[in-house]
Image 1 (tube, rainbow, N blue to C red):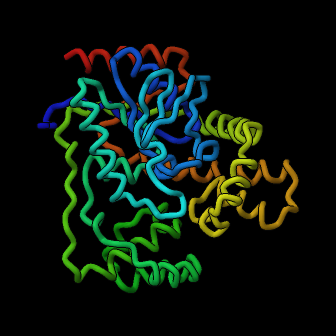
Image 2: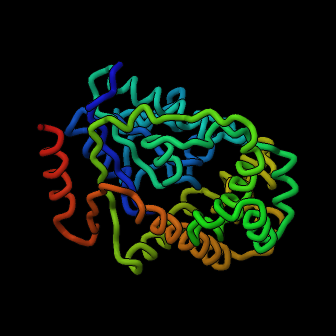
Length: 319
């Protein structure tokens, strides 16, 4: 299928602002389907911690590689085993298939999510996607301190270090990947081009004042614990997901892995730690999305924001 000028809607922004709820509403009105753009929602059985469920109550049925919410397909849920690393390269291949399939059936693909790196790779392509993970090197690098990793990347490639923003420089995973890529540069790296870059893309971004964002995150943490987040993690551990792997998956799963190891954290301490971790994650998302080009931003504290978004999307969709 020729994807040039095919319409593609993107809903992006930091966690907890209602991206999935909005996307479902628009999908119902515009004959659309969702394509999740989240680096952890791809994993099976990581449901509560990754926020696969929207804020509004919906009927959910799980398929193979997708969920259905009130009859609307949500692709890129449950496509990978959590014991194995699912890379951005894997995501781009599978998400492209989902988008093409959706278009072939005459529906509007709505890409939804907060993993900015995955979104960039899907819509713009990246030159280093095919550089394979070097597990031996990663194990060594992960034993280094943040300062040691920063020094190493600066030593081996001052050019790469100079291109990294402050968020990248403070993120151990991104530092590890940057070092990994630089050290394999002598190899021929296959360019991965985006199949979607010539689509007619409309990007809608959700935002909110920092205090509102934090309050929504805080409430969501409590809701997820009430929904059984601890029990979900305990079951994952019983099913063979190691505590080390949970820490690699990060955020809620990293915090809960520590909780399972120590068992000496009370509920209030656990809540505060989870909230703090996700506040930091949201700040990193905001920093990343500031670079996102051609995005129309809507503040969810504006009482008319949903009406304004629907009007904007319909005008784009109907022309």
